[in-house]
Length: 245
Length: 284
Image 1 (tube, rainbow over the protein chains, first blue to last red):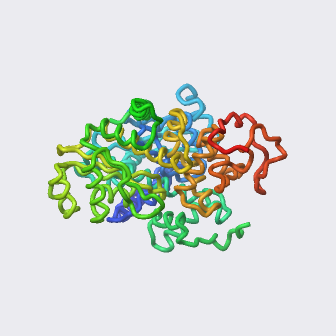
Image 2: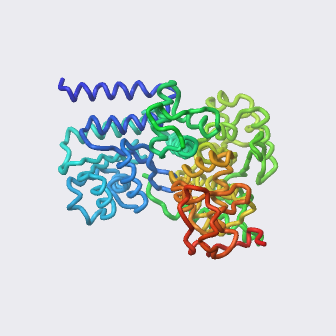
Image 3: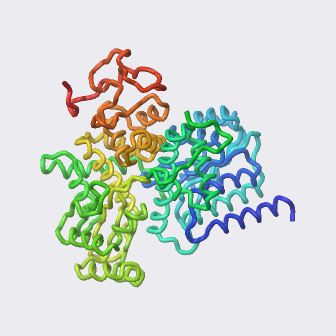
């Protein structure tokens, strides 16, 4: 077993361990995005889920740059994730400097952020496409077939995580769980905004602080977020940071 | 397969508007609830809310038995509507006589069956920490909603949320503004801004969202743009003024020097935003 095979096995075990009864979906997808970029040797990873308007929503991103590029994609209604979602098939551009025709604004934003290649994998669950996973690379060139297969396995793990179960996911269950995941993301955004004011930090720092707090105290991220906005928890900026103004 | 459906929101809002027009009225919560019941071929629909963060109670029902069953859920502390509020996710009970439903709601499920109700589909009204109630659709026949009906119901729940927020400030927006709010309500910036305003003003996230909406309405700007300005520190929403922003929507074409912006805010607003219709506000 090669080093990367061993690492892949470890990641799947970690993800399976996370899928306990009362797991936190945002924490799960956040971990998945980080592990994806590490395991697949790409620079960043973003995860998007569809809402009831048929619009994609960003629920996790491994880096701030990836988050911004994903938002460009959503605001301009063009990009590989939207294509992967609509067609239910993987979409790739090995070199976005030459792919201006498909997604001119997305490509420009991605190149600006330092990404040259992009891959988008659909998140499928039986007949339904729940969303898509975007992989960004700082170097040009296609991913090899093994890497794409591993990426698709991770995307499938994300789908299973969202629906909680592999077996017979009826439409009602898919909708209930998808809405629950999207709503958790909204709660996280509200708590981030709350902390930007109360701690005088940026939104991304606010998220990192909240995530660290949840992991240190062994609590679900969305529970911590809920306590934050209800004023029931007093999170302070970690010591190495400058104190609030 | 899910497909991007840009028209769903417009279709749902059109149905609410049409229901209101029959009475010569403006779109409001009751027309949203009745239009939703029609769209889902239901026997009735009910809306339960928590008026001031207190206990949930039935606010609107298209027929008395729906109101009674809603009331019963809160009395018993069990049922699809009660669960939808608690979980923040839809609760779709396709057959209340089935074993899993009876196990989950042992007192409520048989009571619903006695009223001839076989399916209840409950949708939370709110977003994230803003949990204000549930919209529940009652059906006589067991069985799932169609995929399209399910998505429509979620859009009706969005509509009810926006109408309920606007109700707090006595607003009655026109269709375009409401559609804008419904479509952008899920954008990250809007919810970040709601959290920021909640912290700043020491108010609930629900009140903060209502304040953002009121400001977007009174300044005639899209909700997400107002939210982006709040996050950038360019906007300070004054919670004591019924949605009137502190930096100049109290008059038309304020000279730039008059901005009572808080420190850290950088500068006057663009005058183009002053095309707002300010008749909702009491101008002296």
